[in-house]
Image 1 (tube, one colour):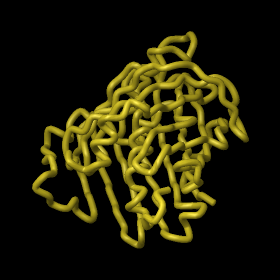
Image 2 (cartoon, helix red, strand yellow):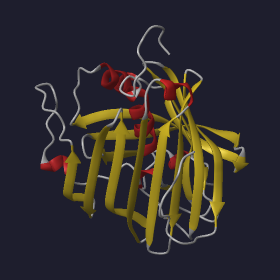
Image 3 (tube, rainbow, N blue to C red):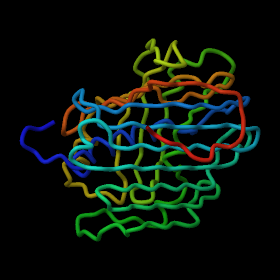
Image 4 (spheres, one colour):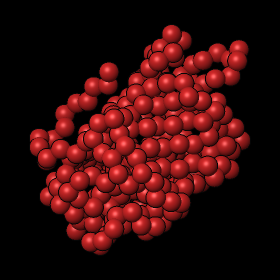
Length: 288
């Protein structure tokens, strides 16, 4: 935290946005989603070592469709100063083993101000888009065009990555990719580069190897280039994500995300990473 600086949801939005971008870095840009599996994961989020939030994520892969959903809220000392919570969900089809998004929705309430985004996609193109409230007009904002809504992936469908083949999952090819992300307000590219293989242990669930990728962020449209948070994300080469396997599949999912922010190091860390047998489609997620 910065001494003497008011703590608000907007003040930490750089860190929260960066973590969201990092989560979006793992995309189904190549490879096959073999078999079926379901993951239930819980995360804690800290900035400069101070707990600021919790999140829960559920993802299920079936034979011909998938769903993924996430929810999170402010926690710890920040609850004395501000409030904020959000949720999101996406679903789609599995075509020749590849995840193809058909819908995406996100809802955030920060300081009693709601923010809603809904998208319908087909073949990687946005067919319908609702954004409330509309993005504020600004002379320095890079304009979004129809071209920026084509050939994209939504942030939540982008949270699953399939590793092709039948051998080791923890290989450089799991990272080597660039993803065209559209979140309803911004279009940006995220590039993953292999860094190393680590060993992790959750409090509940998975323990074993993870593949660690560096993340680089390149804004394309919908952003304001002179904003300090955008400059910081664009320039940093210290963002990284650790990917762990969903048992029974060749799909990897985020176990840990870390990056520098304007308020200090931010870390999203799984405390539970449990794979369950495939079952009914997830309906709602509660974060305690």
